[in-house]
Length: 321
Image (tube, rainbow, N blue to C red; front, side):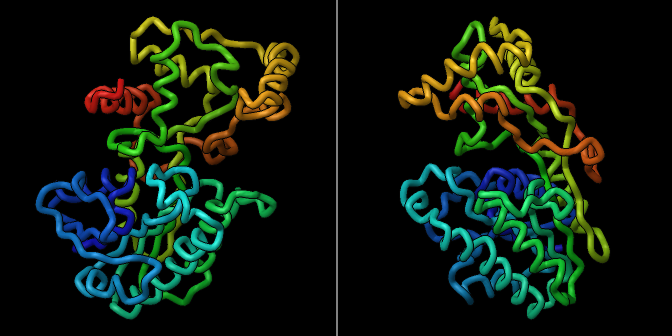
């Protein structure tokens, strides 16, 4: 089965294409923009040029493919390219994430694509979506999701909802700050990090789910999630894997709420801290889900420690740790 992959030079896309390239069942065909950095793609992989904002540019790829995995999207703040950052306005995000997806689906149907797999995000899952959310990525992913669900499509389709994904090939260093904090501190306590919760999944688990979805019949929706862990648990796991003598003690919630919040507020008012005291008390939530959605995936999942270790080892291998 020849699989057209959009977003193939992104974090998940690179891991997916490398995996597909080593299997006998699937042959990847990568759709890239002319400005894309393709040097990290595996040697010998087929490439076609196309752009979701340019109708007609991806016809050749669809004509040659049996299935489509759609990963390409604009995520504000996650591009290191300054030109792309300038483009990350609401209109451009919608043009790519919603209009581009709709057009791609229509053309996939015209070219008799057998299976479409769309990668969304956990917060755009219809059972978890908050229609008051002020996040254009989540909003547009939900709208693209609804285009798929309510369309009369001739192909089988699956929608994938991963939580907070880490692992190898994070060339844009989107999640490196988690590991950098541990490497830079012997004692790691708030406000050196923001308290909260994380639901971490291995990028390989997402890739395995995408591969599984290629063989699914009908219409499907898959959550890829782990357990909800406190920020301190996550940092302690990183410290244990790194073995660099960083101590991450558990901090009682009362200390965060009563003792540290006023300090954070003063720092924020002086432009020295990214969030205010109230936001600090609330804490970050990265991919967290209700209990019934935890540890969900159609493929075997890796543990938090394995996930952290694989990510840490990769950052070490490229010389940033």
